[in-house]
Every structure is written in structure tokens, then in C-alpha cells.
Image (cartoon, rainbow, N blue to C red; front, side, top):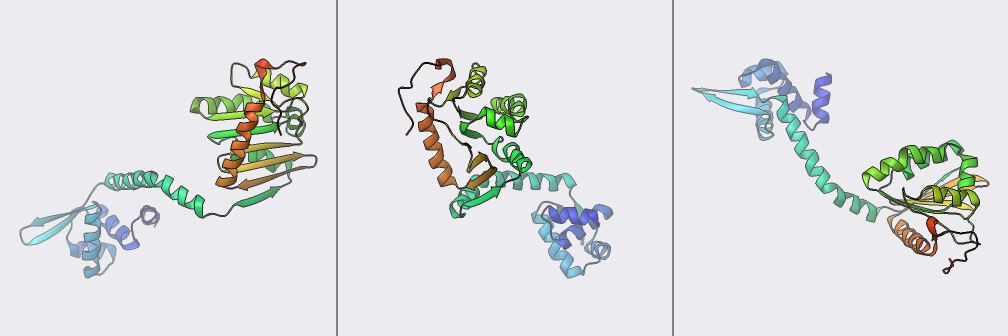
Amino acid sequence: MIEQKVLQNLGLSEKEAQIYLALLELGKSTVVQIAKQAKIKRPTTYLILDSLKQKGLVSEIPEQSRTWYAPESPEALEQTVKHALSDFHELLPVLKSSFSRGTKPTIRYYDDRDVIENLYYNEIFPARKLYFYGTSVKKINETWPNMFEQWERYWWPKKSRAGHKVFEIVDNDPEDIAYAKQSIGKREVRIAPKGKQFLADNAIADDKIMITSFDPVFAVIIESPQLADTYRALVELAWEASIPAKDWNEKQKPKVQLV
């Protein structure tokens, strides 16, 4: 029975679901009537009714020499589930912290272009705090022609509205510089100092580090809170050494060099 399965998925036991459904069909009933409708022995029915009373799904109504039971509205179960979900959400940060501390780093390798593109869309771009370092606009456009369009039209506006932080440090080729300058007024994209070129795109998204090679095309994702924090600190140092697009000119020599 579908209804019984749904109730069990919401936290009721098999017999609790059977008796609650029987009560919904019968309305106000005696234990004998409920046990018969649910096809459960009377002593067990008493125990299950007590359990359902504790969960706020059944009311006990004494009348003269008999005790009647009535079902609470299904909305009562909805409220129980909502309260449980609210409690879970409050506990979730603690659970995630425990999970992170006890989880070994994982490393994943990919060499399929389409799969790697989807990794950007599904695992990297949605992060609340996102760092890009050594991005080559030219190489990404050659490998995934639609990626920057997707980023500019969909992902960046969505992240901006949500208040997410994005750090972008691009290479210093003409296409990278043009991209950085086009971003003036929307967000700050910085340019790596002259003489510093990068052969891979580096992204740090929450607890994930993604390193993408373009020739040949492959990507590695490392999931580790400790490593992600370390790489974020390195990118923040690189951010200080990089040049804001509004300050870039072709003849300048950066005062700070990346090591």
C-alpha cells in the first residue's frame, strides 16, 4: 500500500502506519474495532496506540466505561516532520563538521571534456565562496566555447544576488586582460603579473580543489577541508600580488612578484 510506505518513510513503524491508516478510515473507534481493521492483535494495538499518542497522532477519549480513540488530522504528522526537519537543520553544521574531521581526503580524476565541463557547472560554480587562479580565457574558450557565456549570463548574476564571494585571477594574455576589463563595475577580476603564466586552471570551491589541464585535457578534484583552506590562503596572497583590471597598462611592471 502506497500510503503505508509514505508514512513509514516519514518515520512511522510498519504497525504504527497500519493503525493510523485504520483510524483515519474508521474515525472515532474502540481498540477492538481498530485491531480488526488493521489486522493486528489487540495487545499490540494498545501499545501502538500509546506510541501514536506520544507522537500527537491519536487522541484518547474516555466515555463512561469505554475508551475511544480518534485520529488527529494528517496535518499533525506534517508538523511533526517539519519540527524534526528544523531540528535536523540546526544540527546539520555540527554533523558536517564531524564528517569533515573524520573523512579522509578523496581524489577524483577525469579526462572526458563533457564530464569536466559539467563538473564546473555542478560542483564548482554553485559554491558559496569561489576562487579561480591562473584562468586562461583563451584556453577555456577553445575547450568549452559556451562556458564563459554560461558564467556571465547565469551563474555570476545568481551568485551576486545570493551574496556569494568570487575571487578571479586570470592570466595576462590579451584575451584575459580584455575579460578582466569587461568585468569592471560588475566585480573585480585581477590579472597575474607579467611574466607569470599558468598551464592549468585552478578552482577552490568550498572544500574542493579542482585543477584542470588543457593539453591534454584532464581534471583532478581533491576534497579536503584542510587542503582547501591552505590553497585559499595561497590564492589570497596571489590576489594581493595581482593587478586590478582598472590599474592595468601594457608597460607597467608589477611591484610585487609571485614566487
